[in-house]
Amino acid sequence: MAQTITQKIFAKAANRPFVDAGENVWLNVDTLLTHDVCGPPTFDIFKDKFGPDAKVWDPEKVVVLPDHYIFTANEHAHRNIDLLRKFADEQNLPNYYDVGTDRYKGVCHVALAQEGYNLPGTVLFGTDSHTCTSGAFGMFGTGVGNTDAAFILGTGKIWEKVPESMKFIFEGEMPDYLAAKDLILQILGDIGTDGATYRAMEFDGSAVYSLPMEERMTLTNMAIEAGGMNGIIAADEVTEAYVRKRSAKPYEIFTSDPDAGYHSIYRYNTDELEPVVAMPHSPDKRATVRSVQDTRITKSYIGSCTGGKLSDFVMAARILKGNTVSVPTNIVPATVEVAQSLETEQFDGIPIRKILEDAGCTIAAPSCAACLGGPSDTFGRSEDNDFVVSTTNRNFPGRMGSKKAGVCLASPLTAAASAVAGKLTDPREFLR
Image 1 (cartoon, rainbow, N blue to C red):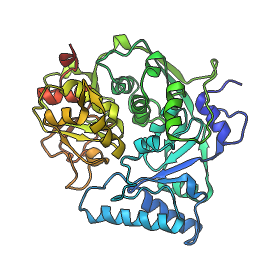
Image 2: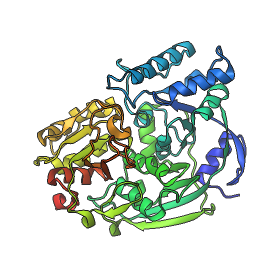
Image 3: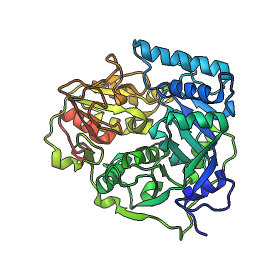
């Protein structure tokens, strides 16, 4: 029987030849991810349910990447890190990446890819809703609550319903003024924040496969903003080249059968799309940038698991080179690797970091920073009267700090163009 890529990965993880959408199966989990926000309560539940001396099912398969509330004086944030260290030490977890050491990596979803944990055909669960980012690698990734994560910690298994799949096909060449963020915001505007609830969002088409891995990660990252269980892109030679540089572990590539069944199929021609934003206070409140072009901004923020990858800063540099920002512009690399790449990677022969600094941007240490609001001393946090154009993934009230602030989601191209102009600005104004 014909199956989608997500069904095939579920079947493999369930030791079954076939699974049908809607049925419940036990999955064997390949990797469990947690971080400083959800790690401590997950560990508490694990000890409560499995016993104070219980051991995790497989220390090699547990990855702990503190990243959310890192560079802060907040005592509660520091206590969470202490609890991670204690559990990692008790359980002899080799994949704990401690803050304040040379093992610290930065934002978990990008670090997973860079450290070789994302392998085609595997199953990843994480205590973070944006774990779906990893689906860009032809694998299954989704977020779970602390109780489910604790159960995985003890057993290596989880009981899940096989999701229906929706397919989103982007054909044509990507224009230089579009980014993956525009594609996913286009989808969100079309189907809404509940349009893919408990479904797999499968991305396909020549435009998708023309994207580098980091841009593909932007697409799958925001599947959850449509209510999706996971986002997924079948692995190709671009995926394999990325993976082989970072891991020697075996993997298996799955693709959807041509006659696989889908809940729905959406088709787009990238030539017909234009830069878009999501206006406050919902990721599906789509507007073309041109239609809101006179909206004044107070800050620009380029960072997060969605918008803090090297490719995002290269896009920003295309706009910022030779220009000066007119509002405070915060640059937050997702990971240490990205931060280092800003020094070595160049645009038009100039290091990316120099272009950003010369334009007047402020560059922070790698972390989630203001994406999740954070303590009062969090870098880039919004204030009451702010209207921020941001490459992050959510713009709910209070998401980046003040509940009175407005957050407008945009691509790095639009965020950079708007930073220079001081108002929402179509990047084509700078790319002519």
